[in-house]
Length: 100
Image 1 (cartoon, rainbow, N blue to C red):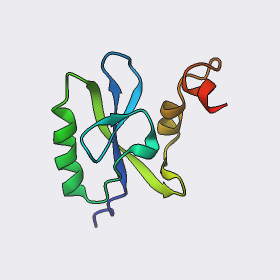
Image 2: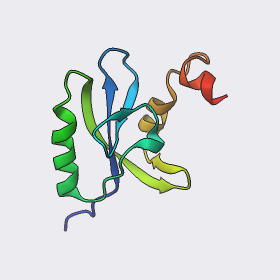
Image 3: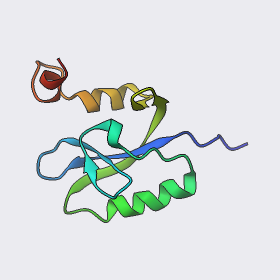
Image 4: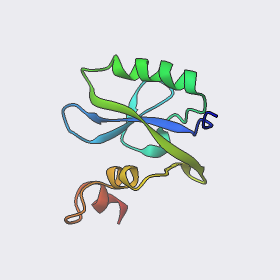
């Protein structure tokens, strides 16, 4: 039996800055997970991935990441995605300094 499709967002890295970015409903990229389009259908997810991958001049390494619906928008379900959205952990800089 096939597993049910879990909600996902499309994430990648910005080509020039290297920052983690998320694909939005209006075909743009945002550094904020709360702006990401939450995709709840497998066929729609594949179509949106095609849209995202067409933007190779802006991003690299696009993929689907599992999320759950939170009170402030999507929340990652895997540690890797939570780590990616907060940035490096060696000292507070970039996103970590902004969240403090």
